[in-house]
Length: 113
Length: 116
Image (cartoon, rainbow over all chains, first blue to last red; front, side, top):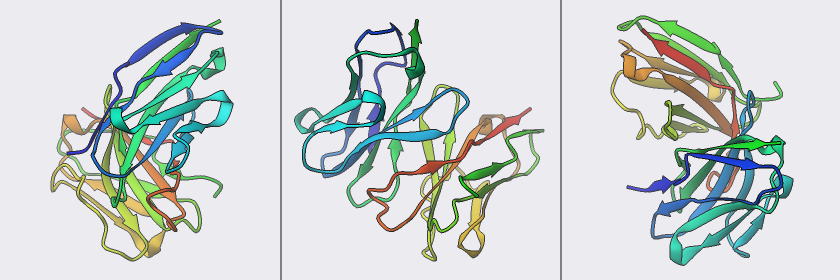
């Protein structure tokens, strides 16, 4: 069965530190990849997505993610985090030909001033 | 409305009772999803509606769970004979439905269900 693994469940950083959140998926075919974010007290919202083309995808608020097909990975990065990035981050995969997103367990990020 | 609306926001029930959770998607969105988020778990897919097509029920965990969507808009998720393991946040999402593989989902704020 398809699955999505997020290896870091909790991450604590200081402001200005660099961020990388891991995401691996298990599906051998074409995939569409997403990162969603849930800020405290808010709805889940899309951060960025990859469908095809350049494997380095830019999203909102300075986030980016790189699709590495050979590693089945789609890690999220940000060079310098801010306190306002404190949130829960979810990686999601839409296997080709399927109409539902498969989500990872999420990573809670806490950024201290 | 401007976003996906879910009600109630919180529901406390006793084990064995039935509950109904409501989702009002964004107007015009033909695709509607239900997910469940348990403590420390990811979002678990439950069911997907697309227009007038037969729903994809592959994620429903047992026959105690059912969902319907009336008139292609509002959806109700029903859990019969609730169990404590049903306690979770139930999230509804909708999308325009023109390209389901690539669209972003718009999520509601969820219903926190607690089964005592």
